[in-house]
Length: 117
Image (tube, rainbow, N blue to C red; front, top):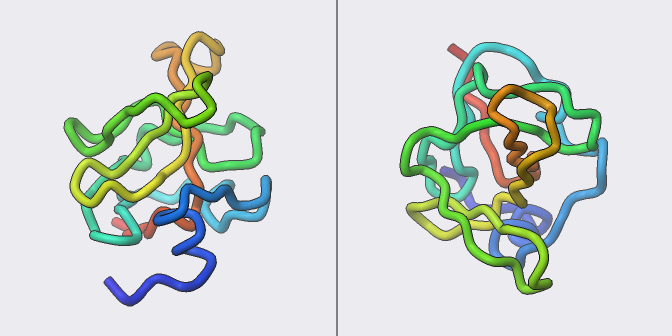
């Protein structure tokens, strides 16, 4: 993967958040796979992506063993990280009722790279 931009570093390495509705993958619904922008690990299939209208890319499941969950520093939310490199992806929320899986991975587009299939 190419070196991270300053914005990507702020999100992936320093746990920042991109502005809502600004991410290039928020409304991307092409077939393919989303990989970690830092290390290239396959994280999410496009089949798991859905419209949540929250301002960030939303997925109702990750590729098996690709995403790690950790209590966020705020003590309320659950952070999601790339299982290989530990890069910050965003947060996961449950029991919102968006899909039958009742899970929403709210992911910064800056943490992802999309590979079209």
